[in-house]
Length: 320
Image 1 (tube, one colour):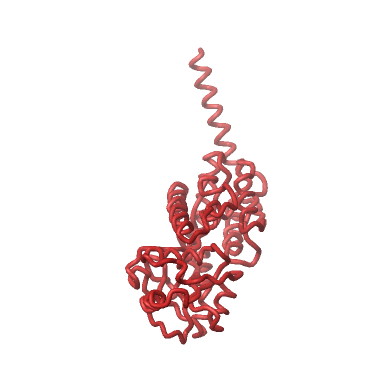
Image 2 (cartoon, one colour):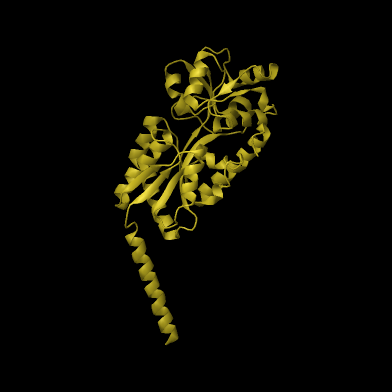
Protein backbone atom coordinates (compact mmCIF):
# COMPACT_ATOMS: atom_id res chain seq x y z
CA UNK A 1 0.00 0.00 0.00
CA UNK A 2 2.82 2.45 0.90
CA UNK A 3 4.55 1.65 -2.39
CA UNK A 4 1.33 2.31 -4.29
CA UNK A 5 0.85 5.64 -2.52
CA UNK A 6 4.45 6.70 -3.31
CA UNK A 7 4.03 5.73 -6.96
CA UNK A 8 0.77 7.67 -7.18
CA UNK A 9 2.35 10.72 -5.49
CA UNK A 10 5.33 10.66 -7.86
CA UNK A 11 3.04 10.42 -10.86
CA UNK A 12 0.94 13.31 -9.55
CA UNK A 13 4.05 15.48 -9.03
CA UNK A 14 5.27 14.72 -12.54
CA UNK A 15 1.85 15.61 -13.92
CA UNK A 16 1.77 18.89 -12.01
CA UNK A 17 5.33 19.77 -13.06
CA UNK A 18 4.53 18.97 -16.69
CA UNK A 19 1.40 21.08 -16.57
CA UNK A 20 3.36 23.97 -15.03
CA UNK A 21 5.99 23.83 -17.77
CA UNK A 22 3.34 23.60 -20.47
CA UNK A 23 1.70 26.67 -18.98
CA UNK A 24 4.94 28.70 -18.76
CA UNK A 25 4.88 31.55 -19.39
CA UNK A 26 1.53 32.53 -17.94
CA UNK A 27 2.23 36.26 -17.80
CA UNK A 28 4.55 38.89 -19.36
CA UNK A 29 8.32 38.43 -19.09
CA UNK A 30 10.83 41.22 -18.42
CA UNK A 31 14.01 41.37 -20.52
CA UNK A 32 16.63 43.61 -18.87
CA UNK A 33 19.24 45.41 -20.99
CA UNK A 34 22.17 46.90 -19.02
CA UNK A 35 22.84 49.53 -21.69
CA UNK A 36 20.94 52.43 -23.24
CA UNK A 37 18.22 52.40 -25.86
CA UNK A 38 19.33 52.73 -29.47
CA UNK A 39 22.68 50.93 -29.14
CA UNK A 40 23.73 47.56 -30.52
CA UNK A 41 22.93 45.65 -27.33
CA UNK A 42 19.47 47.21 -27.20
CA UNK A 43 18.87 46.30 -30.87
CA UNK A 44 19.82 42.65 -30.28
CA UNK A 45 17.60 42.47 -27.20
CA UNK A 46 14.61 43.97 -28.99
CA UNK A 47 14.98 41.58 -31.94
CA UNK A 48 14.92 38.57 -29.62
CA UNK A 49 12.18 40.12 -27.50
CA UNK A 50 9.89 40.44 -30.53
CA UNK A 51 10.64 36.89 -31.71
CA UNK A 52 10.20 35.29 -28.28
CA UNK A 53 6.96 37.19 -27.77
CA UNK A 54 5.47 35.42 -30.78
CA UNK A 55 7.01 32.05 -29.94
CA UNK A 56 6.04 32.01 -26.25
CA UNK A 57 2.72 33.79 -26.58
CA UNK A 58 3.35 36.40 -23.90
CA UNK A 59 4.59 40.01 -24.00
CA UNK A 60 8.35 40.48 -23.57
CA UNK A 61 8.93 43.85 -21.94
CA UNK A 62 12.41 45.18 -22.77
CA UNK A 63 13.67 47.40 -19.95
CA UNK A 64 16.89 49.43 -20.17
CA UNK A 65 18.55 49.55 -16.74
CA UNK A 66 21.59 51.75 -17.24
CA UNK A 67 24.20 53.16 -14.88
CA UNK A 68 27.42 52.30 -13.11
CA UNK A 69 29.22 51.30 -16.31
CA UNK A 70 26.82 48.39 -16.71
CA UNK A 71 26.73 47.38 -13.04
CA UNK A 72 23.12 48.50 -12.45
CA UNK A 73 21.57 46.39 -15.21
CA UNK A 74 23.76 43.36 -14.66
CA UNK A 75 22.91 43.46 -10.94
CA UNK A 76 19.19 43.69 -11.70
CA UNK A 77 19.39 40.49 -13.79
CA UNK A 78 21.35 38.56 -11.16
CA UNK A 79 19.17 39.69 -8.26
CA UNK A 80 15.76 39.13 -9.88
CA UNK A 81 13.41 36.44 -8.60
CA UNK A 82 14.40 33.06 -10.15
CA UNK A 83 10.86 32.36 -11.35
CA UNK A 84 11.39 32.54 -15.11
CA UNK A 85 9.81 35.96 -15.52
CA UNK A 86 13.02 38.01 -15.64
CA UNK A 87 16.05 37.42 -17.81
CA UNK A 88 18.60 39.69 -19.41
CA UNK A 89 21.16 40.29 -22.13
CA UNK A 90 24.53 40.27 -20.39
CA UNK A 91 27.63 41.56 -22.15
CA UNK A 92 31.42 41.20 -22.19
CA UNK A 93 31.68 43.76 -19.38
CA UNK A 94 30.63 41.08 -16.88
CA UNK A 95 34.10 39.58 -17.38
CA UNK A 96 35.71 42.95 -16.64
CA UNK A 97 33.76 44.87 -13.98
CA UNK A 98 34.77 42.78 -10.99
CA UNK A 99 38.46 43.04 -11.91
CA UNK A 100 38.06 46.81 -11.69
CA UNK A 101 36.44 46.56 -8.26
CA UNK A 102 33.10 47.88 -9.53
CA UNK A 103 31.06 44.86 -8.38
CA UNK A 104 31.34 41.34 -7.01
CA UNK A 105 29.34 40.02 -9.96
CA UNK A 106 31.03 37.75 -12.48
CA UNK A 107 30.06 35.14 -15.07
CA UNK A 108 29.30 32.65 -12.30
CA UNK A 109 26.59 34.93 -10.89
CA UNK A 110 24.07 33.80 -13.54
CA UNK A 111 22.30 30.86 -15.08
CA UNK A 112 23.56 31.12 -18.66
CA UNK A 113 21.07 30.58 -21.47
CA UNK A 114 22.89 31.29 -24.73
CA UNK A 115 25.55 33.38 -26.43
CA UNK A 116 24.02 34.97 -29.55
CA UNK A 117 26.46 37.58 -30.85
CA UNK A 118 30.17 38.43 -30.82
CA UNK A 119 31.93 41.21 -32.71
CA UNK A 120 35.69 40.95 -32.75
CA UNK A 121 37.92 43.99 -32.54
CA UNK A 122 39.48 45.28 -35.73
CA UNK A 123 42.80 47.12 -35.95
CA UNK A 124 41.86 50.45 -37.56
CA UNK A 125 44.09 53.29 -38.77
CA UNK A 126 43.43 56.33 -40.96
CA UNK A 127 43.02 55.65 -44.65
CA UNK A 128 46.08 57.82 -45.39
CA UNK A 129 48.17 56.25 -42.63
CA UNK A 130 51.72 55.37 -43.69
CA UNK A 131 51.25 51.97 -42.05
CA UNK A 132 50.11 49.27 -44.45
CA UNK A 133 50.12 46.31 -42.06
CA UNK A 134 49.82 45.68 -38.33
CA UNK A 135 53.49 44.66 -38.39
CA UNK A 136 54.34 48.15 -39.66
CA UNK A 137 52.48 49.63 -36.69
CA UNK A 138 54.13 47.26 -34.20
CA UNK A 139 57.57 48.13 -35.59
CA UNK A 140 56.77 51.85 -35.19
CA UNK A 141 55.62 51.28 -31.58
CA UNK A 142 58.85 49.45 -30.77
CA UNK A 143 60.94 52.17 -32.39
CA UNK A 144 59.14 55.07 -30.69
CA UNK A 145 57.31 53.97 -27.51
CA UNK A 146 54.66 56.50 -26.51
CA UNK A 147 54.43 58.21 -29.89
CA UNK A 148 51.37 56.41 -31.30
CA UNK A 149 48.09 56.90 -29.44
CA UNK A 150 44.92 54.81 -29.46
CA UNK A 151 41.28 55.37 -28.54
CA UNK A 152 37.80 53.86 -28.82
CA UNK A 153 36.39 53.43 -25.29
CA UNK A 154 36.76 54.82 -21.81
CA UNK A 155 39.72 53.93 -19.63
CA UNK A 156 39.77 50.17 -19.05
CA UNK A 157 37.12 49.47 -21.71
CA UNK A 158 37.00 46.44 -23.97
CA UNK A 159 38.79 48.07 -26.91
CA UNK A 160 41.66 49.33 -24.77
CA UNK A 161 42.11 45.76 -23.61
CA UNK A 162 42.15 44.58 -27.22
CA UNK A 163 45.35 46.43 -28.04
CA UNK A 164 46.81 46.11 -24.53
CA UNK A 165 46.38 42.35 -24.71
CA UNK A 166 48.03 42.21 -28.12
CA UNK A 167 51.02 44.27 -26.99
CA UNK A 168 51.36 42.23 -23.81
CA UNK A 169 51.22 38.99 -25.80
CA UNK A 170 53.98 40.34 -28.08
CA UNK A 171 56.09 41.16 -24.99
CA UNK A 172 55.64 44.91 -25.50
CA UNK A 173 54.72 47.18 -22.58
CA UNK A 174 51.06 48.20 -23.12
CA UNK A 175 52.04 51.71 -21.94
CA UNK A 176 53.99 52.04 -25.21
CA UNK A 177 50.65 53.05 -26.79
CA UNK A 178 49.00 55.71 -24.59
CA UNK A 179 45.22 55.34 -24.38
CA UNK A 180 43.04 58.39 -25.02
CA UNK A 181 39.67 57.75 -23.31
CA UNK A 182 36.55 58.39 -25.37
CA UNK A 183 32.82 57.95 -24.90
CA UNK A 184 32.68 54.97 -27.23
CA UNK A 185 34.02 53.96 -30.62
CA UNK A 186 32.28 56.69 -32.64
CA UNK A 187 34.12 59.67 -31.08
CA UNK A 188 37.32 57.63 -31.06
CA UNK A 189 37.00 57.04 -34.79
CA UNK A 190 36.30 60.72 -35.42
CA UNK A 191 39.45 61.55 -33.49
CA UNK A 192 41.29 59.03 -35.66
CA UNK A 193 40.06 60.67 -38.86
CA UNK A 194 40.99 64.12 -37.48
CA UNK A 195 44.51 62.97 -36.66
CA UNK A 196 44.23 63.12 -32.89
CA UNK A 197 45.00 59.41 -32.46
CA UNK A 198 46.66 56.78 -34.64
CA UNK A 199 44.84 53.52 -33.83
CA UNK A 200 41.26 52.57 -32.94
CA UNK A 201 40.87 48.86 -32.11
CA UNK A 202 37.06 48.81 -32.14
CA UNK A 203 34.67 46.30 -33.69
CA UNK A 204 34.30 46.08 -37.46
CA UNK A 205 30.56 47.02 -37.38
CA UNK A 206 31.40 50.21 -35.49
CA UNK A 207 34.07 51.17 -38.03
CA UNK A 208 32.14 49.99 -41.07
CA UNK A 209 30.70 53.32 -42.20
CA UNK A 210 34.08 55.08 -42.17
CA UNK A 211 35.82 52.12 -43.78
CA UNK A 212 33.26 52.09 -46.60
CA UNK A 213 33.57 55.88 -46.91
CA UNK A 214 37.32 55.52 -47.48
CA UNK A 215 38.32 57.48 -44.36
CA UNK A 216 39.52 54.55 -42.26
CA UNK A 217 41.17 51.25 -43.09
CA UNK A 218 41.22 48.06 -41.07
CA UNK A 219 44.50 46.15 -41.07
CA UNK A 220 43.42 42.98 -39.21
CA UNK A 221 40.79 41.40 -37.00
CA UNK A 222 41.22 39.99 -33.49
CA UNK A 223 39.54 36.69 -34.38
CA UNK A 224 40.35 33.33 -35.92
CA UNK A 225 38.72 34.14 -39.25
CA UNK A 226 37.93 37.12 -41.46
CA UNK A 227 34.54 38.84 -41.00
CA UNK A 228 31.81 38.34 -43.58
CA UNK A 229 31.91 42.07 -44.36
CA UNK A 230 35.59 42.00 -45.34
CA UNK A 231 36.57 38.41 -46.22
CA UNK A 232 40.12 39.36 -47.23
CA UNK A 233 40.99 40.96 -43.89
CA UNK A 234 43.88 39.09 -42.21
CA UNK A 235 43.60 37.84 -38.66
CA UNK A 236 45.87 39.17 -35.91
CA UNK A 237 47.62 35.79 -35.84
CA UNK A 238 48.32 36.02 -39.56
CA UNK A 239 49.49 39.61 -39.16
CA UNK A 240 51.61 39.28 -36.02
CA UNK A 241 51.81 35.65 -34.92
CA UNK A 242 49.85 36.47 -31.74
CA UNK A 243 46.94 34.28 -30.65
CA UNK A 244 45.31 37.16 -28.74
CA UNK A 245 41.63 37.60 -29.59
CA UNK A 246 39.09 40.11 -28.31
CA UNK A 247 35.39 40.51 -29.00
CA UNK A 248 32.43 42.39 -27.61
CA UNK A 249 29.83 39.67 -27.01
CA UNK A 250 26.21 39.48 -25.94
CA UNK A 251 24.30 36.56 -24.45
CA UNK A 252 21.16 35.79 -22.47
CA UNK A 253 21.15 34.76 -18.82
CA UNK A 254 18.73 34.31 -15.91
CA UNK A 255 19.07 34.50 -12.13
CA UNK A 256 20.72 31.45 -10.58
CA UNK A 257 18.18 29.02 -9.17
CA UNK A 258 15.67 29.33 -12.02
CA UNK A 259 14.03 25.89 -12.53
CA UNK A 260 15.78 23.84 -15.22
CA UNK A 261 12.57 23.16 -17.17
CA UNK A 262 12.01 26.89 -17.55
CA UNK A 263 15.67 27.48 -18.42
CA UNK A 264 15.50 24.82 -21.14
CA UNK A 265 12.23 26.12 -22.57
CA UNK A 266 13.50 29.69 -22.82
CA UNK A 267 16.83 28.51 -24.26
CA UNK A 268 14.99 26.52 -26.93
CA UNK A 269 12.98 29.59 -27.90
CA UNK A 270 16.17 31.71 -28.08
CA UNK A 271 17.77 29.07 -30.29
CA UNK A 272 14.79 29.16 -32.68
CA UNK A 273 15.22 32.93 -32.93
CA UNK A 274 18.98 32.59 -33.45
CA UNK A 275 18.54 30.07 -36.26
CA UNK A 276 15.82 32.07 -38.00
CA UNK A 277 16.25 33.76 -41.36
CA UNK A 278 15.12 36.99 -39.70
CA UNK A 279 18.11 36.95 -37.35
CA UNK A 280 20.53 36.18 -40.18
CA UNK A 281 19.11 39.19 -42.04
CA UNK A 282 19.36 41.33 -38.89
CA UNK A 283 23.03 40.42 -38.45
CA UNK A 284 23.84 41.03 -42.11
CA UNK A 285 22.09 44.41 -42.12
CA UNK A 286 24.08 45.63 -39.12
CA UNK A 287 27.29 43.80 -39.88
CA UNK A 288 27.11 41.97 -36.55
CA UNK A 289 28.63 38.53 -36.03
CA UNK A 290 26.50 35.57 -35.04
CA UNK A 291 27.99 33.37 -32.32
CA UNK A 292 26.17 30.50 -30.64
CA UNK A 293 26.95 28.72 -27.37
CA UNK A 294 24.28 27.00 -25.29
CA UNK A 295 24.16 27.06 -21.47
CA UNK A 296 27.26 25.12 -20.29
CA UNK A 297 29.23 26.04 -23.41
CA UNK A 298 28.34 29.69 -22.85
CA UNK A 299 29.53 29.35 -19.25
CA UNK A 300 32.88 27.99 -20.47
CA UNK A 301 33.15 30.80 -23.04
CA UNK A 302 32.62 33.39 -20.30
CA UNK A 303 35.06 31.69 -17.93
CA UNK A 304 37.84 31.81 -20.53
CA UNK A 305 37.07 35.45 -21.32
CA UNK A 306 37.09 36.27 -17.63
CA UNK A 307 40.55 34.73 -17.17
CA UNK A 308 41.89 36.50 -20.27
CA UNK A 309 40.52 39.86 -19.18
CA UNK A 310 41.93 39.49 -15.68
CA UNK A 311 45.38 38.76 -17.07
CA UNK A 312 45.52 41.76 -19.38
CA UNK A 313 43.89 44.14 -16.89
CA UNK A 314 46.57 43.24 -14.37
CA UNK A 315 49.22 43.84 -17.04
CA UNK A 316 47.75 47.28 -17.79
CA UNK A 317 47.48 48.10 -14.09
CA UNK A 318 43.71 48.64 -13.97
CA UNK A 319 42.78 45.52 -12.00
CA UNK A 320 42.10 46.14 -8.33
